[in-house]
Image (cartoon, rainbow, N blue to C red; front, side):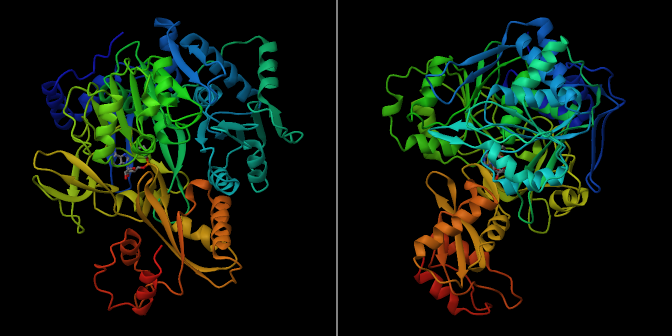
Length: 637
Ligand code: WT7
């Protein structure tokens, strides 16, 4: 097995890039031809960025799981598809060959069907990082149901919002999950969420932690019992539902600068081609290698580079249940040696966190198997880049800095491992098919090199989002209306003198905390739910490990028995409403917020103060109450 569309040299990249821009339809048709289709497309691409309407491989019929499973069962049934490494290193790891994974997926697909699931249903998945999560996702895709995975760290309220938005009828969960020395009561959280989710008819519960859970008659069933039932029926096969290329594959909720998280929609054909193509090219995956993406499947990185990209390429994908620092900060390196990992793909925040333990945890680890390193989720600072290069890659592994978003489905801007050059803190060059442009505030394109602007993409690519679930207008206004005829990423970007791209961070009110997107408005709404809070404003500030920390300015009219207790109470409220990931790092009580005469909060000033740039706040004379700024400055945390 090899990948005919794998780029093999810098010159080859340049040729392919040019071809992808000059003749995009032929370019993508050539690549899509290497997949399994029940029927080829009538039209490669039909699009406009006004509505927007984006259709790839229109008329094509396929099932993505036949591309991730069946075709490999034919050619390499005994190749390892999944290596699963448990949270607790003393528990045995598990592996699944393609044949075994295919069997498990068919089996669970039959469980879904016997519980009433049909094509087009939305199924919410709230599970720990166990192989059954991957099996569940693929089983949904097998029967044409749309999965909506919710990260295990989100609160009951957040899950309920997502279930209601998508009108899910089935929830897949576990009794609990293990992460480090903690055990998370997933089923209890689901029970709380479901008190406000009448659309849910069935909950299928996997046993993982064996904590006692309540099972509601008629609604809740045990995963294992359901498997036994379909086994007893003796039908090990589940024929793949034949889907249109543009049928929905999944919904994944992500935060924006306003309102509640939106359900980003990806479809079957384009997403498959994009995740596969980017996986094979960015990481330069070679057959037989072990790919270890450390992300949680609750985020898009896990969807694209633990499941769909690797499996559609017949690769071996390593899935890890735990966290990098438990039982100690050498866990990643132990896993790399234990499973002879070739490719390690992680987040800058994880690197910085491990860096803070020094090099002791690396002592005695060989790391000889590593060939390629990758980062994703946020800009990587040079110090972390060099540490990763020196101590993990031993200056012998190319590092790919992969820039992309939930909305983009897969990587858009990155160097290709060992093929195009790396440059610390630069994502470098666009992948074939990606046409980035920088624009100024007025939407005017900024030409040439050595320039900065807002990053947009001017032509569709197969993996891009199609809509936001249930609200197409929101998709249009969020991504396609800021600048006419362009997809707006929300990121600021520099194109240096050599034409390399460096992402400088969000230009909207979206924070990136430990590589996770959090909207400031969302956090403010949660803080404001606390009974004593009158108003709040949230901004980001530089944080050594998280990249950005959350700084909250809060007007509180309740009586503090103890200010720190109030801070804890407010954090608890945020945890309850969103999840622990959104807890503020700092809460400063203020008597007022800097506002313009029209009542708009001047975040720029608050951001500067949180960043510690007190000297240079710019013009504050237009404020309603300039004195409040002095107070905030003098009480800065
Ligand atoms: C935002 C998207 C892509 C999967 C994980 C995050 C930031 C992502 C990089 C990078 C600089 C990056 C951007 C982007 N980002 N990768 N390599 N360099 N910034 O997905 O939650 O949708 O967040 O993450 O700001 O807009 P997401």
